[in-house]
Amino acid sequence: MELIVDREHLGPSTDEWNDRIAGEGISYLSLERVRRLVVIAPHPDDEVLGAGGLIETALREGVLVEVVSVTDGESSHPNSQIAREIDIAAIRRRESELALRRLGWDQPLITFLGLPDGDVASHRRELDDALEDLLLPDDLCVAPWRRDGHPDHDACGESALCASARVAAKSLGYLVWAWHWANPQGFDIPFEECVRLDLTRRARARKRWSAEAFHSQILPLGPSDEDDAILPPSLLRRFWRPYEVFVNERVRT
Ligand SMILES: [Zn+2]
Image 1 (cartoon, rainbow, N blue to C red):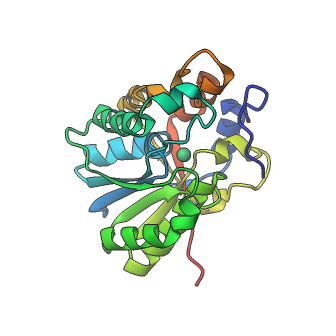
Image 2: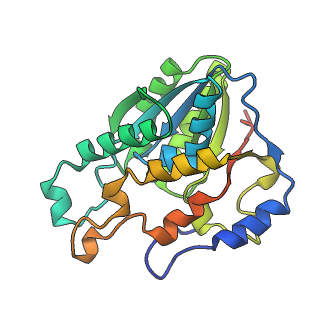
């Protein structure tokens, strides 16, 4: 697996994934016995791209929701002069708050851990401790799948899986970058272990409106190549599908 994201590497089409998902007979996720949903976001925007529909559904069904924003995503444009001149961390925190309000959440509850963007793996202990402190038995903890393909995503996924197992919370892995690098005809994503959530029209509309709050990621910061949008329309499109998929992985201890 290699994560290359640029104009030449746009990943599989939405149709290819839709065809694969349709043929998989994936079981449906129920929130019936979930008291609280805790969503772990490595970078502000992952919570919406990977689980925005789930957050909207949980809020509508009266489930408590909390988001843990692990880094501020301050390294999204590492070579951009403009990014150095603005407080991109503060901008991304505000974008996340606005995005969550657009999902129907009046006062989003977000814990910002402020770990370094790009180096979560070196701070695993800190993250593990924070998640173990926060999680309660019977919470549903949703984090990136631990093989999503970005080092911060994988570290968050691994940490959430372990912390959830230790406190007897349930956990699921959401997919962001796996949709980009995985082969729709192959076995990269373990669909036999997945559950799906079908989104209402309202949830889909809210998710899309919510993602549009991330101006610093969906629009270019400036005119040079280094300022390019991280999430151009061609890439965002795959998150507008009428369902979300989560990996229901068992911890093997
Ligand atoms: Zn991310």
